[in-house]
Image (cartoon, rainbow, N blue to C red; front, side):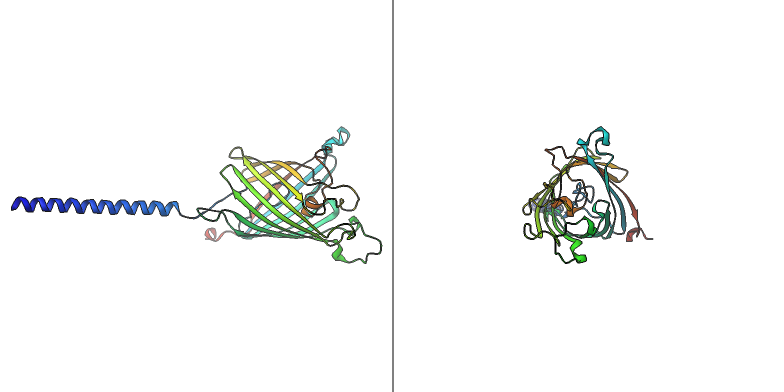
Length: 307
């Protein structure tokens, strides 16, 4: 009888120990599944707020001010007497500011056509691991050029609004891997003043851009805008032929900043002209060298650092 009781106790103890071990194992597996399924934001789809000439889905941080200088030179095929385009240049100066992590605004001035514009960029969706598959942003701007740069049809009643254009873009991006990011940018540019007998006020285009990371600090970038309407609308202020904008570049990170170098058939660096009125062709040697540089200032410290 004593042996029977001892054996029963031993069996019960072993069974209880096995059950506890099984419960513990199941809890660990449960925690592993929850950890794997945790939704985390995907960061740094691109390293700068611009892919090349136009916007990426990246925003400035809250309270951050970015002073930008975008420089574009003349055509490389202008020869040695024009220093291969370096004697001919246009500049855009800009101030961008991060109001919130998801919201930034900016004001810019371009020396070409004496163009001024203001913009807003809002991040509406954020790509997540095990969650949202894309990042989605909206970019909108209002652009004004000097009256003297516009072709004014005879008999046109002049209004200040004739100088304005409106750019609306949806930025749809996905970080495919640590090395590759892609972005689609459906775009609508509305020009208040066009020759309505020949062209529409609305230019619709599809932008395609991307980045391939070569190392921790260097990446190749590219973007292309395919115009779906107004494909033959001339260069602003002239009757010259226009082309789809195509750009390739290289991003170099230096001390937390990104220095962007590029080659493009777009001489200007404003969306109004890049998307609808690029006047040079890669095929004909109309290639322009350019660069973007910026200096970032923290105007308002993040809450976690204020104390």
